[in-house]
Amino acid sequence: MGMTPGQQALQRYTNHAHHAMAVAIWDDLSGHGLRVLDGEAPADDRDSGVVLSLGKDGIYLDWQLDRDREHKIYDKTLRAEQARSISAVMTGAVASSLAALGYRVHADFADALPAPTLVVDDMPLRS
Image (cartoon, rainbow, N blue to C red; front, side, top):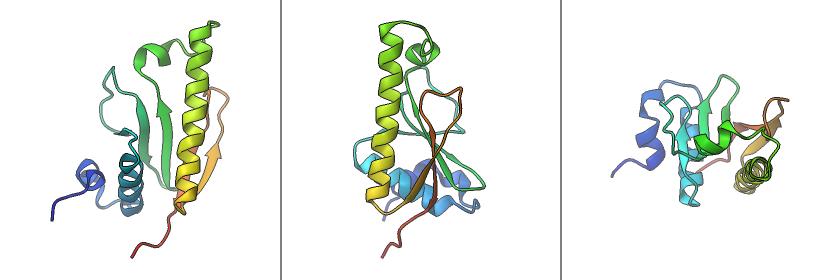
């Protein structure tokens, strides 16, 4: 049997305490049509999607806009306001999807970010 998208993308983290949960989250989100990006991999200027990072407290998720919009997200323009709204809405959608699947998700707010970082610290039992 082949590797799942999450197993393939995160195979260098197999010794991490949250590896299995990261793989499950990656597979669930990509299975719902979201683009998932490795937070430790070099960023591509065109990439937008859910950035997944493994941390000591769980899995951290952020919505990343393409570099052009992210760079200008704090401008006082309609386009920047739309980018902030997209980031907030997509973060909420990711949190809702994961919560509906049984993950324990909470938000970690930072003043410098337009949307919170999501922290997933528990996952549903899988058969």
